[in-house]
Image (cartoon, rainbow over the protein chains, first blue to last red):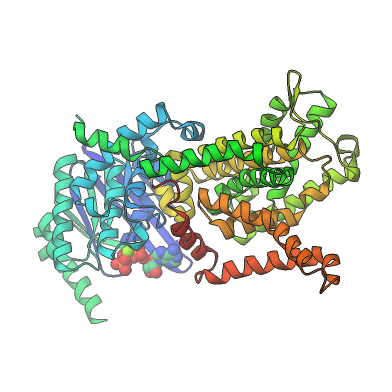
Length: 257
Length: 347
Ligand SMILES: Nc1ncnc2c1ncn2[C@@H]1O[C@H](COP(=O)(O)OP(=O)(O)OP(=O)(O)O)[C@@H](O)[C@H]1O
Ligand SMILES: [Mg+2]
């Protein structure tokens, strides 16, 4: 129990008549890749949104560092070391890759607008320091060619990668990835899986991976939780999950309908 | 640690003026700016001063509207607060211009924070309406708070002085304005290549994704309003000490719209665009005046219609610029930004 980072306790979330999450409990542990799978509309994104503070469960708690995240503002949750990517890529489209990533160093920089305006001196030194961090992430995710490109103009696969890079630049303790491989071709998917593993090994952080691609999930995750219609129907090692009749039924059911 | 080569690269990369070519032109520009008042006609210096004031104001509006995405229809209100603060401080309390000007910026910035509060929960058009209302409230205050503002008859602020030297000519005032324009441009330029500037752009582009990297939307929207209004306050102060008299008529809705026109025409979310737009819109009435003078013989009625012509042309120009951005305001945003992006700061 000591290596628990986040403890999600019996959360309930609803949108009007739709019950998006129903009594979901889950633990996110240190240094693990936890996959969350489930059919479309199962509530995976909603669960991530609860952790990052965008959605507020009407019941239950999400305990992290002795705080209940369901009562903390999203920007403060970011400061606590929780970073994420989005299913539908949400980047600062008017900025280039580099500035998107430099923006993600926000919480680690100190000085305010006045020092920005002066720039020379402390701000410049700080910028150079953080730029070094950002360049390392650019190297890691092989983004050199698009460093200076406006992200709005990048192809989909690369925007996905910038989204991941941005989360990494926050130097988080927990990384939430919402379908990082969706819509990619095979090669891009392989790259992305490799990146996730590289990140995991290098940073030794907790990674929560929402993903539909079963091969990848079975390959790289330590633990898997399965959601269906807002409830957690199974949790365990990839092998446990593979053979779980409830999981098979949920997927077959979704396939048939 | 840092690889030496990489470090030099980066330090080179973040220089504002990158190539010797750019540096060369900047030196030419600078020399030109100094020589200009010595050789130019008084009227041109006057126009140049108006452009300078407009540039500061337009930079301010672009910080809020162009870079942070909060459309303001009340920019004139902040200029008015700046202008009147400066005029009142210097006439009623005898505070020198050099102190009154920054104080008027601060006063406008505080007003900006207050206006920001109702805008925090609002988006787009609703912010436009809030700021629009603010502009009217300021006008109303100026007219009715007679003990402070002299009501409709306006207020005359003294020209700045340093020791025995009084900046009473257009030429001497020009140098004050140029220094302020350079400071204002430099500050804005630096702002948007570092932390807070990036945060503001992040809010404009995707506010959800801005929160996710730890940007406090409330805090930075308030900052955007206050920095923007600070600029407007400085511009207003420069107007007050330059014009023979300022009245509420200097700060009507028309002025707010002119400022919007400047940044739309020049480039939304662009420092250089603010400058081009400010110059263009400031000189436009003069251009129209020139043209009406030219055709006076054939069409004598034109001269009397000058005011109408001016408003119609403004309207037309805004519409033309809006239409040519196929994705509406946001499209013009991006397109113009790309266009105006490079000169003379290759970044
Ligand atoms: N903002 C919202 N407003 C209304 N309903 C929502 C909202 N967000 C999610 N829902 C609903 O909650 C349920 C769970 O959605 P969610 O996006 O979490 O599913 P998901 O598991 O991420 O699905 P997918 O695999 O398609 O991404 C769905 O029924 C969805 O329609
Ligand atoms: Mg989803």
